[in-house]
Length: 528
Image (cartoon, rainbow, N blue to C red; front, side, top):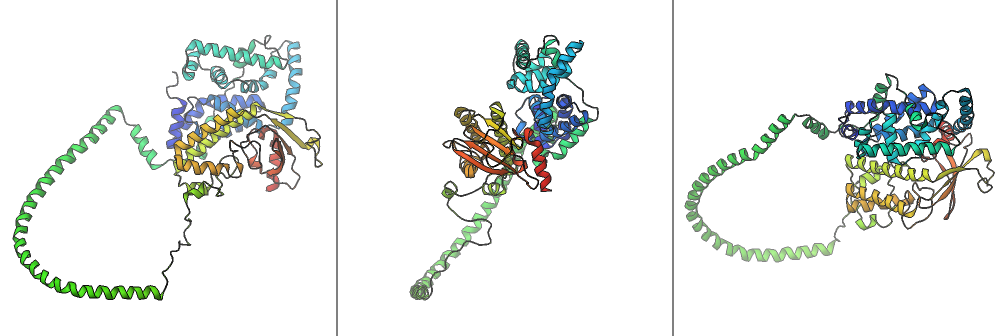
């Protein structure tokens, strides 16, 4: 491959050792892709630079959960789109879409290229593709890799990679045709993709790398030692292994000499002991006589001592054992942890672990990183399924109950992904947690997750105020916060009923954030 070091190797090097050079290499490799995507969606170079830095900060924070990705191109593209949507208000996006058809007609009438009008919809078209198809187009056109390189990363032959790219381009064309736009006169989807690249400013890679590294994880002593060992050459490694192999032989040689010296010393001690044995036999005979006399006296003393103990027991009750009240822990049966004890596992809807659950399960720093990485992966997969079945709708009379105005109400219908998909999603998550914490701690952890319904148990169908992952289709309505509100009012309607509550701005799910960014910002300003 052209790039001898894969993305997952660089991510592992950074997550394990905090390698700034590894992170810088990742930024330089993908900064053009991220900047071009942000620039296409906003048309503002300064805003695209800010979006680029935020995306790489997110990469630094989520590095432990991304070690399994052979290339980060697909993940970075999706993260850039979500970050951009969070920065662009929904009203501006709607206005841009309404003007697209008008701009195309004018451009075609004047005989010019329609790429400038079609580019804002390109990333939405890419997000509608399957993951492997989207990744193939991102690498082929946005990162300008050859078909052979695309095939190697995807694990297929070059011809198969060519077919996958062709099929994905056809689907991009279908996306535009469904919206009334034809790519035939503009050179087709390949020409549109080729025109979508945009080089990042020269200094942006350094800025993004510095921002990401400042937000990234710290390096442990063990990782530092392991990093030095990994830097050895093959000759140095072989020499180190020979030294390690020779240690047992040297130890055995010195041990044998020590045994020989000890044997000689024991022979001398045995001879001396035999001489002392004769003297001891006569002394023992004398002691036996004295002992017989003492035994009689001792029996009398034992009887007296027993009587004294009996009197003391009658005079005062035995002292009770008390648990130290100053201890930060309480003693209780393990079964209590699995039978209703109220314990929060997460601080928020984003899966940040509480100090109580980490202390109770005695998690190490590495275990905390791995568990939170598994939670982030679960949420990413769940929100991807939700986004596929989610649509924003106009509020009806039921949505406006309580005196809410239509222009101050935003309503979303969210389809249920399906019990099989949800069960598989949760099973994969619990299997991953079990591989980190083991059976006993995983059981306690899963009960803490279901406490107050952060994740709905498999037997429950519906939605709750504390739920982050639901087991049902639902309709959710958000209401514009008033000038004094620091939280966003909302209500959820499902087969299990209707729930009214409020959310902290930072607790709004990622799938709704782009359409609620203006209200989120207002609530945050009210809190200041």
